[in-house]
Length: 349
Image (cartoon, rainbow, N blue to C red; front, side):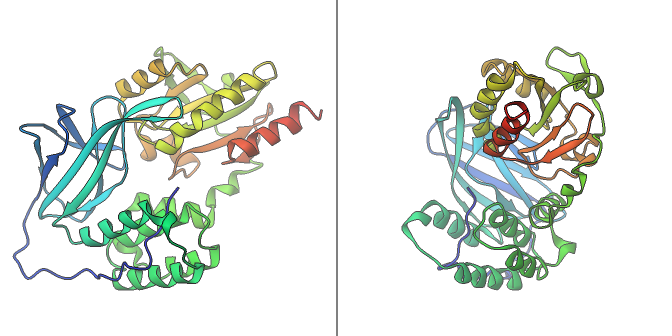
């Protein structure tokens, strides 16, 4: 779940009087020596890699604007949080450990602290609060008021859309409040992917595709064969499930999808997983290791590819349910909602 820092996040970002650096350098400290390599990702794309030496690591590069990133290790891994970087000297401390999510074991990269960026104090406060939020009780209006203060103060920084996107994934704030906060953001300074995902969460623009005909595409399967969706879905109800190996909420849904596939496989029902990974090997490794039995294909161009663009997909997991005639009958249902829908199709009829 996604949560929002409210009560004590009153520290505003200040402008540094020091000379700005023309590059970012991340000086990292690994608390436990449990891997040889680390990778820096942004929006699902790998932007740098590094080797561990004496429990330390360094990432470096040049940015034209602040960037939201995450750190991963080799194999199947996930991180507890993203963080923003800018052209400055940044200190990061991480812990890596094995973690079991449902039936899956992954390398869990926990960002313990970030120092040195324009937004690091606010972000550290935010994630510390999110971790301990069950110990607090805050009203809806308090959440809204505190977020409004931050957005008004930092409307020209991409952290505004990032935090609002974070909270929009939950039901804490209603649509009216979300729209109010959205209108306070300077859209010209926001990350396009965060902004598009935020647009989806607030306005659900891709709901317009419901009851329209499915637009077919062709992608490669695990075996390297081309899967044409027009042939794949013929005479069947098909669940098109969009996911990626770096998407932890997607992975958490897989045991439920497995059960869904088992319960309805004797009916005219099929599942096609569409991965938005940019790493073909990582995708193959995950499918084989976790014994995913339903058909899967991959679009390595991710959110920028034709597959995601057709349906304005800017956040995953995401799914479409298509009937045998090729009409989209449901969009982005939970597994519980899908089960009820499939029961109404196969059991009631």
